[in-house]
Length: 488
Image 1 (tube, one colour):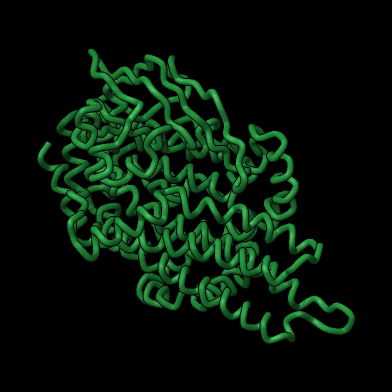
Image 2 (cartoon, rainbow, N blue to C red):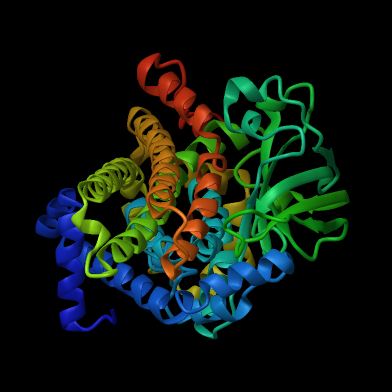
């Protein structure tokens, strides 16, 4: 659907039917609701025009050529502003947060989650630049992404946390204390020397910039977990391998190798030792709702293809006339709606807290500073200094309450787990009822089944997400410590 007046009206109706809680936004923040509808409309148009005709062919191609990347498809996405959805408006982006991006992810992933996850992994790489007191990178990196997007040149990002011997461990504070880490950063004059490997990094082989977390003291990983910005052209950085994948093949998962890779001090996000608290936990509060949306999009796509199959007549009858098919469709639709409402609740919880910070008068005032000043050396040097990082960090601590953002992490962890389980359940149920029939719908649903499994694994396994929910919402032994930004 193109963003015509009629198309936007139809999209608004669809959003309100699928997400009744958006009525509050429509009534009290109509411009924001208009923006949501336009964004989802652009994603739908992109999916129909470019992704749907190529998704099956692309999946088969990458099965045989696992390091192939669909650059032409991503270039097509630049005209839809899919690379700047969560980039702040003051540097030319769309300024969306978790609600907007979650809706975009469901829409894109209903066509092909592999393609959708390219944009999702890109946003995951952007997110730390927004929440870790790193305003200096808004001009140096985010503006470049926006300006190149306007030219049709995609500049991609990635986030690297997982290590060969530490996956789930590096996404939870208590587990990180005893994690078997293989990568480290050593402090040297002017910066850090990185050695080791990261693995299963989405977009890792194609990203210009990668946000990476690792310890500067392997004996105290939790206390020294630090976030760095890596440029693919840095000496000592390489990509030795792209994984052969079962699902979501369009989005590459790569191994990253660092061999005496020097990263300058200015490429440290926030401060040394703040990679987990509040860094990674804050990032997960932002990203797990969109991952739940990715899974929901997979389930929705499978459901729509199954419904198409069920309504197709064979020998004068249609499968949908049978009660067992009716019950299966009702079961699928129910679970999809529950998954939708769960991820939307999480996304709205995150936006409630972080939205105040991102729309604060201080950040908005930066937009009135001439671009020539904001790109000058003095401006960038200030925000990269201790005082500048404290100032940008204090904006978050002033507007974002610890109890609210911790609750957002709890809801986001729940949404991710619910979404992943829903995707696997719905695709499995659809295949079960298809039986042995060979048809076009089966190809799409089999692909969705393979795509679904990954949503139970990445962004923390579903088991870890349930532990995070328990620790934050039930036992209340884990919270995001925003005040750490002030103590530096």
